[in-house]
Structures are given as structure tokens and as C-alpha cells.
Amino acid sequence: MQLIGRAKQRASITLSGDGAQAAEVAAALIRHGDSGDSGVTIRLLCTSKALDTPLVRSVAPRTPNCEIRVTEVDLDEALVVDGRIALVPAEQDGAGGRGSVLEDLATARTLELLLADAWRGALLLAEYERLSGRLRTEVGQRVLERLYGGCTDVVAARELRVSLRTYRRHVAEIMRDLGASSRFQAGVRAAELRLLPECG
Image (cartoon, rainbow, N blue to C red; front, side, top):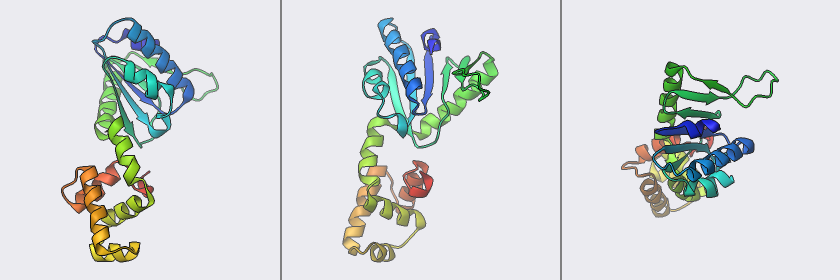
């Protein structure tokens, strides 16, 4: 992870949840912070498996210009520095290497664009934790499934064995949490965020 120290503008890092990788990135960010170079933007795109690492909970929040987003998409470990250098997982050939450094500009830029797309679809850490609270409960999941499936309120309330008024209250809370203006949009947004059981 010494490549982070070579960044002049930005470094994008995906965290798969691997403890060794998280420790390496944490050490690199501490060195980066100690260098006093706060002009470099650090983007950490992590899976939910990486949330409880010291990197995400204590090191990254204290690192200047470091932003954390969370995705439910499975990620391979990767690092792209300034769109010109990339570190990707090594082939599983038994060599025991942590990764391969690619200095081909076209390859690094392509990987950076792919990471940027994943970044746009991910949630800020605080937003992810807020949504996960209500929307990952059993009731939240069941309501989301019905929204995504296009059930009418009457049918959904009957299936959930709640009153129509209670069901509509759950729907209104979920729509507000997801920032959705329609029930259909709430179901689609939940699928995009992989909040539905079959999407997780």
C-alpha cells in the first residue's frame, strides 16, 4: 500500500473485508496523515464486511479528505492512484503475492472509471448505517419485498397480517428513508442498494 504515498490528487481503494488488507491500508493512511499532505482525496469503497475494522471505525475518520462509502456488491481488493497506477489482486498461482502493480495508463484509467461507477451507487457510511437499522428488520424486509413486487396495499397488509393503516405507515417511513417519491421507486431503490434478501 506504499502506492497511497505516491498519490498527488486522489486514491481510490476498495475494501473487501480482508483484515490484512485493512491493516495495510490503515498503516498507509496513518503515514499519509503524518506527512501533512491533506490535498489528496482518499476514497474508501467498502463492503459491509469491512465496516468493523479499525481502519473504517477509527483511522479513516481522522484522515484528512477521506470519504467512506459502503456497497453490498462483492468487491475484489483494488487501489487506483491518480488514474495512472493500479494495484489489483495477484493471480491465485500459489506465489503468495498480495497484488500486481499496473502502470499502464489505459488500464488504470479504466479501473478508476469502474470504481467511480461503483462509488456513485454506494451509500455514505452514515446513510448506510441509518438505512440498515430500519430497512434490514424483518418487517422492513417484508414491506420492501411487497413494494418491489408491486403488491397493492390491501394485499400486502393482508399478507403481513397488519392493518391497512399500519402497512401504509411502514411504507411512508421506508419511502422517506429511501428518498423515494413513489412506491415503485422505493422498491427499485431498495433493489439498487441490495436491501432486498434476494439482492444481498
